[in-house]
Length: 531
Image (cartoon, rainbow, N blue to C red; front, side, top):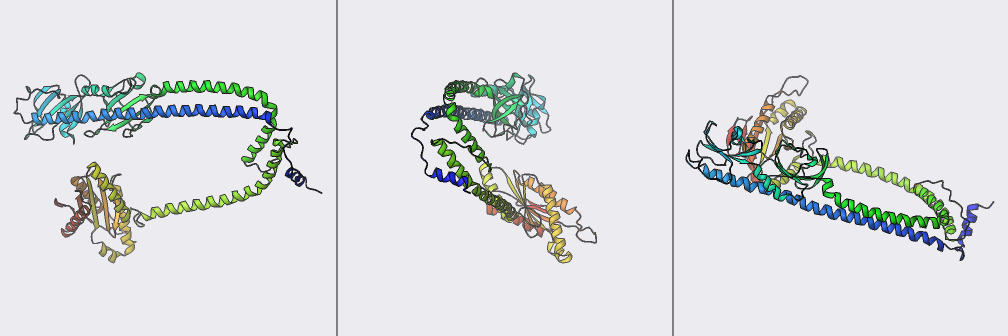
């Protein structure tokens, strides 16, 4: 018996479209479909271009206003510090009559912190500036506003001068930089208090605090929700203070007008397109019915349906030829699809295993296998990055080099297993003692190294002494006898002074001095022995 599919394939091999059964009438629908797609694409491109243009303008304007506002703070404070340094050299009793254009108040404190003389507005908390590491503190003024209490870098003997600046002066600086009438520029301290602001608060509510978690982008605009209002904004730190200047504006105020206009244009275009498409559909519905059935079959085939029956089209026009040709193609693709899917499954599985292996190898390459700390290689790479960073930022950087005292004798006496256990326990003590920003690594053998950013020599010494004490006071149980064992470390400390090679050599020399001084001690390079 002859195969029906083979008979159909043989007939279609010599079949040609009928001259009288063309699809000229069907071109009407194709024209309207092309019009619909083209108009829709143009409208969409218009919307995207307008939105991108507007966002680009805002992305330039708002960060620029924020940067200018932040830059106005530093010169203002520096000028006040210079004036305070000049006034600090006047004899006692002459400051009250000294003219000043920068200060709103002035007070002199003796060595015990008591006010000797004052002038202008002086809050009770003005002495906070003397305790601040930057010599600057936020204070609340009698009028309910905030101000700055500033102490100069250089005093005169036991006398300390503190000047008061009202932050209301900042408001006029910020108002000049407001990019729009809806924008808000605010000076915010570390606790999120709004010390000074210019412009309306989002939502029209009083604004005393501003959470900067959603805006910590160093000048790059971000979207967040503030006081229940969808806003865009950014924050930028101030060099002299641990505060930030933030700019905020409601999202609707920034983008609403243009988006509304674009939406109206799109709605008009869409209405016109739909009207013409409806006319085209009415005209060509009958002609398109076979194409619709064939399209549904193509869609189901693309979705992976293998046992698909193609609708029979008996006409000898292009649609009939296409449907029968597509049926043959489906039969050929079924076997190919199964082979491809099987090959893809094997490939995905191999890629997954390869990625896992690469991840494990990468982690092993930078990790010490015994202590699970970073190894010597990773430390050297991290040290290079940190030195480049502090050379740009001028921040402090310290290194602590630790060596377990008499570790060789411990190994010889108790065995390498006990020595390894001591190394692991000491590594855990180091990890628990350092900050999250510090790096602890096993440098080699019984040596460990700690790299402490934003830490001067005194801070590094305090950290080293803390580590040394905790190790010396810890008991190590390393064998079945359950007898506690004591271990100590010697620590060499150095602060970065601009040369990488000397940086490590100084710490190594300090460690050598600690060993020579009797061990179980801390030596800071250039500052002598500390126990």
